[in-house]
Amino acid sequence: MRMVYMHPRQRRRMRRYMSEGVYLPMNVNAIDEEYIIRAYVPGVNAEELDITVEGNTLTIGGEFALETAEDEQVRQSELPSGHFQRTLHFAAELDASKAEAQVANGVLTLRVAKAESAKTKRIEVKAS
Image 1 (tube, rainbow, N blue to C red):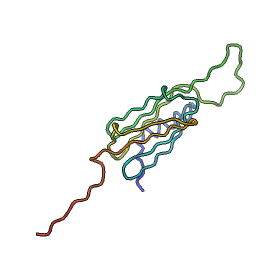
Image 2: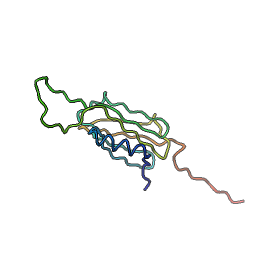
Image 3: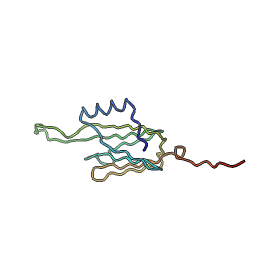
Image 4: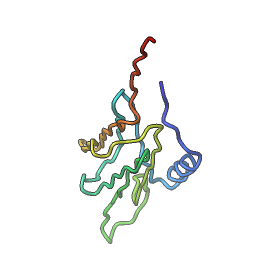
């Protein structure tokens, strides 16, 4: 099974996000033709998500917004709030034209096809 490579900068960024409390947990799976990414985005509308693909890099961004009334005093705060962004670097080039994304029940499901150049191709060997 091929793992998604995580650049050391990305690991440091992930630790920083976790320490700030604004972190986007996700699973990344791969099948022959595409990658399937699932991320928790509770309370974030589809229109508020910013997803970009460039080469072999996928970036997901948005904002967890919590509204409180002026007369409320925070006694305990565990829910994330603020801007989030995760960048993933894949071993294969991605084809953004064949990407699909949907949000249901607070889970973003993103399917991104591998570029034609990244797919396994069989080479026929001819006898001489």
